[in-house]
Length: 268
Image (cartoon, rainbow, N blue to C red):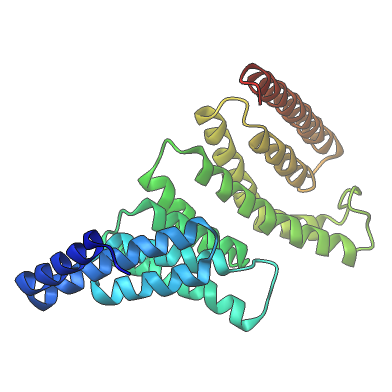
């Protein structure tokens, strides 16, 4: 049996709808569905959250947060390890909803970041890089998008280098002695390596002891070493790579020790 309080609330909602007319009822419905979607999302019932957020958007297309939540729920349903068409469609739906948010607010950082992350997970690196650079424009003091651009650049240089070495029957650690092949690779990879290094240096300026950035700087130095024209230059670059590897390990150790001390201090 409904309590008098619930009955009164229902009557008040009905009266509010009458007073606000049709559009007002849709306004209330949109926010109610959005709240239900948030609750479903919190307990990881992402498809149910999608269903509620879709109704919220349909009820009030101007409700930006509902669109942002809908995009995030779709993204949560996406499995980056699956190439199934149905799974990829979830990512596309998430991207479309993030784009819808950007049509309403071109500076919405969450949407730009969300699209960049989805493109990266889908291995659509050029599009991911485009949106990570937009993220940098919107949040120039955030080290994460700088780091992400560098990771993309390393991915785009590592793969063709390994393919070339395989074709030349070289081990991954062997130098590329064929000058013509090395020069062709250098023309393609050098701009990406240099940009990646610049991005990582900026990320490390913005975040002290950024061990992940140090680790990728080590990797980019190794890419640059394989483009070197002389053995001496290659050795120098490999030494720099080793130095950054050591710095990354030390920074990771410091971070782990600090986390353990904080956990111990709080009784965690």
